[in-house]
Length: 176
Image (cartoon, rainbow, N blue to C red; front, side, top):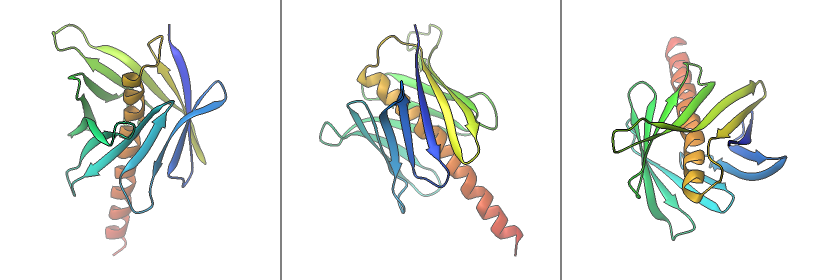
């Protein structure tokens, strides 16, 4: 059984909303002059703490547990990322195409068995607002699964923001 959520991000907004059955159950917010992002889904509250200048790393803090670090995101060449939770679980972020209209969070198995796709994300509409679907391939939303859901959205938005910054820098160089 799978569960479907939706997400919406308005144009020029630093906020994203996560919706289930017409009700807002979560969201993400990035400050004006900060790369850090605060996110929540149901009772899970996180802060994605982005550090570094050219090569970024991200620590994930649990805001419900005195700002304790519960995971880390590592970025790899080719727009790939890996989520490592303090519990030892590892999840891979995988995009389906260059436009990042579809991507997955895949659980990596430590015993060598096949990987398990946990969450699939789709960008269903993009004009003045980004709208998308999140399909969770689990019956119940656990706090650990909520961390993975939020991380999948964070990583996509991170890569989109980096792409826009690179395009703006290239346009600035070309205009000289």
